Image: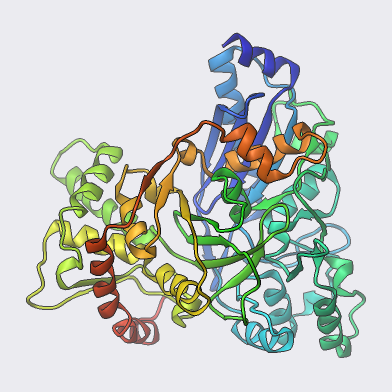
Length: 534
């Protein structure tokens, strides 16, 4: 306790704040990179005229509330008023579209990663670049706005991500960590910068529009882990801490995306390592030994926070439908007058799934709250189907929804393993799916057919990963790489729990997928015929 208090008073700490889909979390680490305090704020996106968005008011209220919650935790545990930290970093959901004019005003509501409204742009840019440009990437949103003839495009002075926006407002600098930048526009890993050839192709593609900008004029500067993005300005300190206690001048690390912070939080920045983040959305990152043989529309090519090439399988929805069903059981319990402990409820239902048939007994579910490009769907309709003679039990029902949460991810992973012969030694798991010990882990191992390791620190998630990146920036030795820093100064001596794939589970998941893939036709029919009222 006395050592932690000394770290707090001397500013030998690092703070990471991450904007997740449903929660904004802040984690403070001490000089040993161990979490010592945390804060959070629950929030949710809204569907506004067909666009998934978060308002600026919600963004700032969420940031300030999460920070205030952290500061209160510090005060409660250590009787210290938080006035400074050694370094700070911000991360958020990757991709999306935040476009600003010269006055710094948002031109159109924030278009999040969840939107699948840029199919035309994505297809054209894929052919133009010979490189996969997913619909959620910032450049796809920009080009779609151009194709749509949206008036605001000519007024763009700055285009960034949510994390980049926060960092800009708190430091005054327009830059972005390379991992988050790789979800805006393709990266040349040899130069640690945007791919210049593709930049020139894009500028030529829109030259007839006669905008007053070229692409590099409006994109953030690319930084790699260890570089400094700026310092917290007096205005930024006041924005972050409404109590006025936090001092300006704190070094700020390059803003990162949730994929990059997930890699840091799971020590997965080396080749042949991978990590899978499974929560509201799910994505798997595989650090490659070499380039893929060709571009695949199902795979994103992004980077680690220090600029190594990564293949990313991304699905828009993971646990949303699963959580909705748990919520239904909660409502039933409340109606019956039973006390509800959500941790116990989740644990009971998840563990019950382990008793189910390996192939789910003829039950199939689709967790699609939003569109899934891997499945060729622009919208989603959560759906559950079964044969009349299916083994309709609680165990099979829960197992089906756990399988459904990672089924689309498996479709993407199969491309890496079967088409490109990518080998991973282990997957590091983190996120809400892994909170109930052993359950999500065994399901993921069966789906990916790779050993899955969950560290004790996995529950800290991306906010802790961002704190580690901030710590690396100020504490790294001369020439010390991010991989070395994580391996020797953060994870040394830590042992995670590893589950190897069970052969019967793997076979059962394959049998489940044999039903799942053909019945996607019914999911597509549901999208076409069951309309959503905005």
